[in-house]
Amino acid sequence: MGQLFFYLGGAKSGKTKTALEKVESWPGPYVYLATAKARDEEMRAKVKAHQAERGPKWRTVEAPDDPAGAILELKGPEPILLDCLTLWLGNLLESIAEPYSLAAVEEKFAAILKAIVGRKGPTVAVSGEVGSGLVPMEPLSRFYREGLGRINQLAAKEAFEAYLVVAGIPLKLK
Image (cartoon, rainbow, N blue to C red):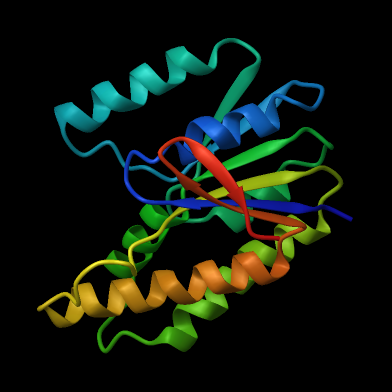
């Protein structure tokens, strides 16, 4: 049975770096499950820089729309880093019709959790903490914040270990 390790933090908090270190504490090879869509030159450069930082022990699997399906295709026990739920939710919202529904978001995320728990090796998931700021003015932004907050709650509940990363320091929540 697979275990989930969950890393949550604000933008540039060090959550991905800390999650990478956790994954690399286990024997490799490693799988980086990417949810980003490189839509512009800045994002493409960022993706290339992150790939170079990870090095040859890492295999990147692009799964911006279906992380659950990608996890199910990985049959081995290799550690997986799912980075990140924040971008995945944005991708999901582009693909579902209005009115947006928390039930639809939770259903899609439940499939990801089921795939993680059903695998043989550990999975480390990264997500952004966006609920500590101002209430967004636009309805879509408010829904995104609500949806991500719900996803983060579900991930933390399922996680074997959960951390909040602040200024590069992981604070153990669970």
